[in-house]
Image 1 (cartoon, rainbow, N blue to C red):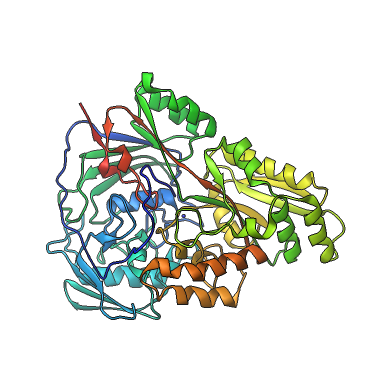
Image 2 (cartoon, rainbow, N blue to C red; image 1 turned 90 degrees about the vertical axis):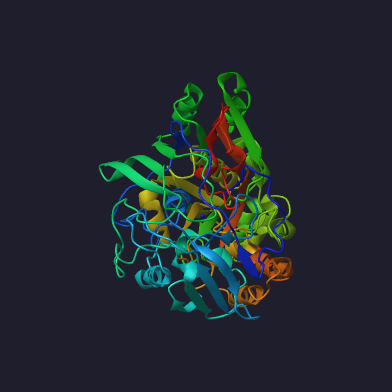
Length: 530
C-alpha cells in the first residue's frame, strides 16, 4: 500500500516475545480543529462499495481513516517498527515455533456506540474479513490464520497454519481492525462511510453524489489505548489537485499536507517560511513499479519483460520527472529495509539498447513489440502522467517497442487491473508493515494483491522459510534469493523509491511524528502551538 517525516531506524529485531504499551488518550487538546488537506478520494463504486469497511479497504488513504477510528490489538508506535499494544494489554507468541499468538485485552474497552468490546468481537472481526474475502481487500494479511479462540472475554488466541514471525505486524494493520459484532454483518460489507470502532477518534462525514466531501474526527472520550491525543478535533479537507492544496496551506486554510506533492512544489515549499510554512523531508519506503499481467500475449515472453528492464533509465526518470525527490529503485525491497540488494542493477547494469535487442533476438523477437502502459490519473499524484510519457519515450526511442499509454481513474483502474485487463500498469506500494516480507509476499502466490497469475514455486517456498526467523536480520538471505528471481523473471519492474515530505503551518506541533513507519497518518500527534 508509504514514507516518513522521521528518520527511519534500521529494521532489525522487529519482534519481541512480549509486546506491551501503556498510556491513555490524555493530551494537549482544545482550540480549533487541525485541518489536514488531502487529494485522496473516498467514493462508493460498484467494485468498492464499502470504502471504510476494514474487510474491504486496502489503500493508504482509507487506512489513514481506519487507523484513527478503529483499534487493532497492536499498532505501530510513534516511531520505529516493533508493534506495541493498543486494544491489547499484552501479546506474545505462546510457543517457540511462532504458530500460536495470544493477546489479553485491556479492561473496559467499548465501541463508539457504547457497546462493550470483548474477545468475541476480535474473533468476529477476523472471521468476518476472512469469510467475506473481498477480492480487492486486505484479507491476504490474515490468510495464515487457522482458527481464533476466545478462552475468556479478555483473551484471544490465534492458531496459525504455519510459523509466522511477522504475524504481530499483520494484526497491527487495519486488516485486523476490531468491529462491533452487533453493528456489522458477518457475511457482507458495510456500504457507505460510517465507522463503529473504538479508536482515538469518532468520525462524521458529509457526502455528495456518493463521495465524501468533508470528514471530521472528534476525540473519542472512551478510547483506551496507547495513543496520546494532542488535539480534540481533526478535519480532513479534499482537493482535486496538489496545486490547489498548496494554495490553501499558504493561505492558512489548512494546517498540513503530505503525499501527492509535486516535485516543483518542493522547492517552493522549502522557501515558504515567510508565509508561515515549513517543509519536513525524510527517507521514504514508498515504491513505484510496473506490474505485468504475465499471461497477456504482448508481455508473456519473459524476454519482453527483460528487455524493458534492460532499457528503462531510472536515473533519468527520477531526475527529469521527480526532480530528485525520489531515488532509482533496483529491487522490490527498498533501501532501509532488511535484505535489500540492487538485484536489477546487478543483472542488467546500465540501460542498453544493444543488450535489450540481444535479449529479444534470443527469443526470436525481431520486430517492435506493441504494448500499452496504463496508469491511474488520480491516485499517485499529478506527476504520474509525465513519468509515463518518459517511460514511453525511453522504450520507443530504442526502436524495439511500440508503446502506447493510457490513463484511467483509480475507481476503475484498481479493479480492472486486478482482473488482468492491462498488460502493463503502474502501481505504488506503501508497506502494510516495514519488513521485507511485505514487499514480496503480496505480489506472489495464489492470493496476491495484484491478482496476478504469476507463480514461482521457489519464491513460494522461501517466504514461509523466512517467517520462521524471529530476528528479521536473519531472514535477509531468503529475500536476497527472492530478489534475484524477480530480477530474472520480471513479473514486476521496480522504478523508484520515494522520499517523504510533509508541509505544515509553522505553529503546528508534532509534524515530525505525523507519519508512522508505514507512512500512515497519525493525526493525534498534531497540536497547535502558541
